[in-house]
Length: 170
Image (cartoon, rainbow, N blue to C red):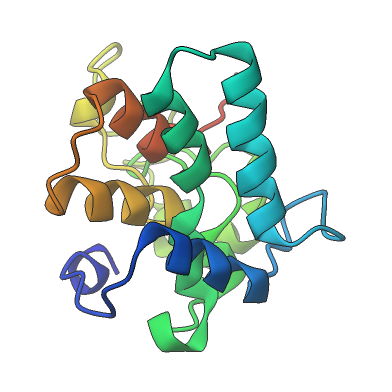
């Protein structure tokens, strides 16, 4: 998926046009299913603006952080929920049971691979996120869109976009 969607050849649009597309997106992993996804973007941006009024880059980051969810729409491939939303996770090590779509991992061949079934798997302790391959989803897609289109957002914004759905409890 990363290779196919990393081409960024599905469409060209403004940020606001993309925000409006999220009115047609339902994220089944989102506890606020009653609200359109565009409301989540606006509420996030407004909350950040209120808490950090002098950080314009952070307001914009909050607004665009979930735009990659357009991958759920037919014109962008209509990928399944488990492939786009929910938690992102490192591949090449044991899957964390707290992951939103953990039930699907049993179908993944890596689930039974002993090389990947330890906490660190193929990675050395403390190797850093830049050296870990993460699952592909809306986070990585939006990160690629921003990066490959020459964003002027700071590296902290790209980090937020890329890893905002990464959780690990243990």
